[in-house]
Length: 61
Image (cartoon, rainbow, N blue to C red; front, top):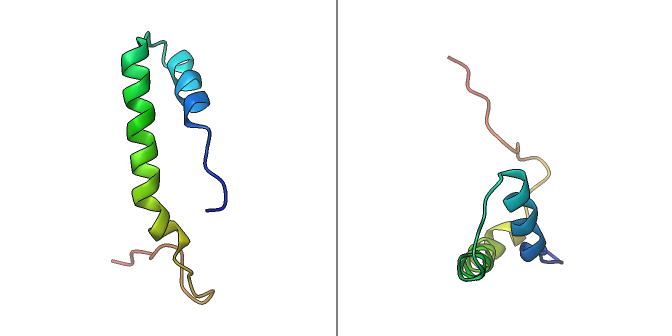
């Protein structure tokens, strides 16, 4: 991915949507974890896919 999401804004928005009250320490820990998860996912997201590949398989019983 070329740009990183603004995780602090995402956390603030989810806090409002979900009616949560997080303290600064919890907010900081969530920010750390989101950044770690994004870093782990980056190589997978950068993997080029052949245009002939289906995005997801279709189950046919």
